Image (cartoon, rainbow, N blue to C red):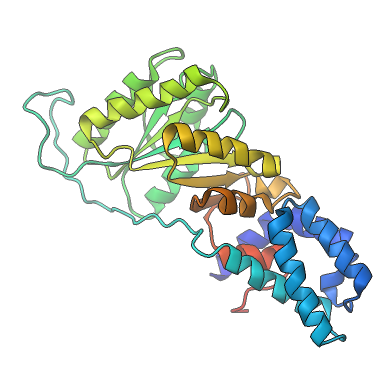
Length: 328
């Protein structure tokens, strides 16, 4: 947990710095007073924690302050982290790893005879608007699964964006990942079809589908997502087993509407929040969870593959308030 916590602390540094600046170092040891409570309220709003969460945090700190007028900022930080962890209860998405479970079928990928009794690969579809970090997240997730001993195939189904296929291929080469791709402008559902057959024939544990980036307001593009789902379900009625929305954490509360529309149209099963290392608005995670109750599987806390970290509510809450890990 120590390594994980340090990743959270480093990745959320801009949010922590912004809160510290607005509260004039309250959590560094200042004594609580009315002015510092006002500063903290402004800081939490600015970091996009939202009205409900900010109100809950301040209410508990104010209660503690009334009971102990000598309350220090560090004690207030502990209270804030406790409230935040409680608000995020149940938010941690956990992927039950399937390692080496699929026998290779071998032979012709398109051979007849109907489906075998062998288990199917678990399909994770990555969804989101352009610029959210979806393609790089797909590659980083595949790398994490591979590090955990799983076998993975990538499906380059973002066939609408000219650079997307090459971008995923580049990551696949860099990280030694298997990829199924076609040309720009190809039918994304056909690529998904071929990739599923290849993954199953080769006995892969996971198929990660990088879908085309799209605005959540464009119905025709949302229909393309539905087509990919229909094609996958011709192979496996349960596919995709996971449909994760990749959201840019720097968008703050604006990402909630994205998540809502994608959830209504495609049926999301979870979230990956990226680019938190580059924003001071790290509280948006809380608003998305409170609004949609979609589990958060991973956070993007940097550029390197290992910077895609599984979400841990306690580490997140303590890092935001500038605290150390409880185990330290």
